[in-house]
Image (cartoon, rainbow, N blue to C red; front, side):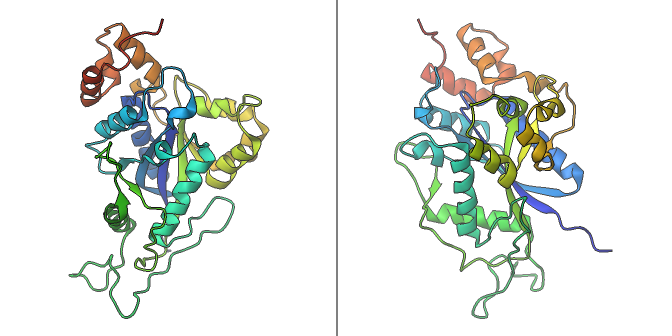
Length: 306
């Protein structure tokens, strides 16, 4: 019997990241570990997308600082990257807009129409063009199909060649929206999905009347799907039962089932800012050292308002 085809996943986390914490990074790791254990998914990448400065949240520091802190936090990761597209727009973007941007971008760069949970997977058929070998094929292994991991590596490599860099943030790149590498890239059949990664607090916000646009919620949960990592021992099943929309799309909500007492589940940006303001040594438990060093160097979050 043939092994069931696994869905390849890119996890996308949106938020303030004000500042990014160890909990945010662990959220990615916990989600990836859980999805792999189900045997149905292969996580091939993670994307952190900090919110635009015009979001209007009190105490939100400049995206220039938040992008840098995010990059410092993931500098040792080989699968999570920071994307500045959302910050570089003229104004605040909805979560739906960010998801659609990355879906369309991956479609353009890979030549793949990403599948969603409500329609059959649209495969990418691997065929060399004009008699040329696929650019994903190892030159020493002539008959080997490219794997999704190899595909992601080549996509990342190609993104670096077609990106533009904003002068004031040298370490960050974003893809030219006119870029189209689809004609150059051909691969094996895969199903690729972008899933929104979030904590249970965001899931709970879906239950607050009037907070979210109904059409946006329908698209996020119905078309894309979400992966929820519990925080503070919150019962995700209880949250889903409070919303008819969440109940309707319960099969599209993947709640991570691991150690509910995970030490990082109680870490938050709010606690980190308070620890910094009060000189609390516990901040080293919340933030990576390079992030702490950057905060102190730039005197972020140190002074309270008023």
